[in-house]
Length: 583
Figure (cartoon, helix red, strand yellow):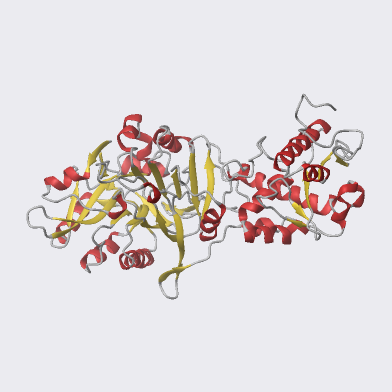
């Protein structure tokens, strides 16, 4: 794999460097549209293609017509996806990208001779450029097509350029190793920009990343948008994750990675046998600008549109997962780097999901669609707490995540546990399993177990503990009159609100918990309540309205420290973890 500057390729062809809007490091935001297609595919010795070619041509032609009409700055489709007939139609009808736009289109397989013929057929309309390979009728190509406009350096005339990049490293472990045995390998990765006046853009095609080295990362990471287009059933597999660590291991914040994959549940037909992958989509945006807008309103807006926030501590990056359904996504994003931009305008806050589109078969168009995060299916197991949890999530899904974490006593040992970068359900480990409770499309066993346990804890608290007077301490008897689930940043360690406006903290730790463990949780939360208290009386009331339950080895529900913070023969203020205080 060698990384070659696109400017050098264009210069040799007598063309100027393109002025691409997404790569100009100014304060102007840029638009992005990506397609996450439905996968009904077939693979054989000739490569990969759609099984229903007419439908695919219709969908991709409509998508490309929409992005042309909307003057979208950056357009992306995944590996093996865009039909060549759709590209031919776009070029011959002069509906390709306008000035300043860049289309990055993963294309269906093609033979080298077929590409040569297409180049000749469209020579009057577009200049095709690609590295020369030895023609081989027995091998197919896995191409990425860059479409953009630039000018002839000698005449100044506008020119449509079709720059084709070939996959350099085959996927292993697939059906009969059909890429290893049948794919002609390229050797060149093209890099746009990379000067002081332009942001860099580089694309990797699926298993190219298996040959991605530290020197490659050092060559491209700086002030760069890295695209990774895939047809990958397991994009989170260990070897496929390693390149991300290479890209993000520096302390700089000027690298963004956008992975674009197919929608969930790809059906692949090979030698007449069809198999459903049962895959997640794996379309993800990784970024870590210092000015990232991690406030609830921005993240909730993205969530409702179909893009879901997580935080990856090992990479120190914000990781935005897209809804797994077949869809097109329209976004507005801040530039990965700003040059000569005044400080008040240079806020790199990240992407905003504007619209999610679904395919409407009746009109044969992509139309705005409401995303399904699959939370409703999980809600059905929340029992009597369903209405409360549903209401909380509909107003702010992160507040529902916070209440569920607090109700289960899972605060991570930090009084800022409720910040999205600390909230355990919003944190992804290196394996990138998504444990978000209000985004339920990850089917990994760990994710399923985590979400179900959270909802089960709340259900038991709501159905088996809070309605039973004998389980309640005297200070919480008013919960019998009425209560709602509630969370506010002004009372971050309390999850209940009574009709009279009083707040309380109710926690159920589940089974297999000792008395000491339950008391440790209560002590931890009491300390957080103390720190958040506005005065002496508020501290006392907050602690007295804290209750932690667990189920002992006999299956009996116990209340940890029933008389703690209520008895008059012990101090009611001060830090419960201060070893110097008098008890």
